[in-house]
Length: 223
Image 1: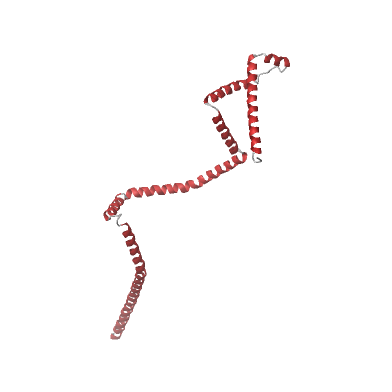
Image 2: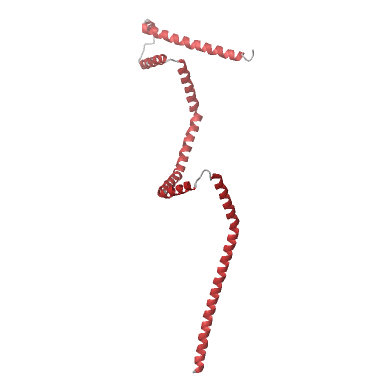
């Protein structure tokens, strides 16, 4: 009886020793981890100290440069305004993000439209539309420089008359010589013929002037 009690006491003691050993091992591991973390922090602080010193020196130098322009009260007032308008700033950032999302969405569409416009401009250039437009602009410039407002008014009236004449050209006429001779007796026909001859004379005089100018330009290098 006493022997069995002794055996049970030894077993209980061994169980307690095992539990104690587990606790000691756990505490030892915790101590090692704590020591390792302390060493890492010490190494980090040792590495960051030069950087912190340089940063403090740089900030001090920059503050010395602007100390005559900036007051501490101004900085405090600015910080208060920023804190009071934090909600407005938050809404502003939300709108900015929305605009950035819109720009990202519309970017491919804008690129496609730009490419199509570029292609159409290249086609127009190959067909000579730009050269034609440039020539038309030069013609209008010359006309504006040569004509007075009264000339432009008369030109508009003559255009109306010419439009009526072109409409009458569709009507059937007698092409015989006798009919043409009779039409030459018409005062309106004579006045129209005189205007045509005057116009042809003006064209001829202008052509002669241009030919003379071209001849003088060709002769000028030789002289």
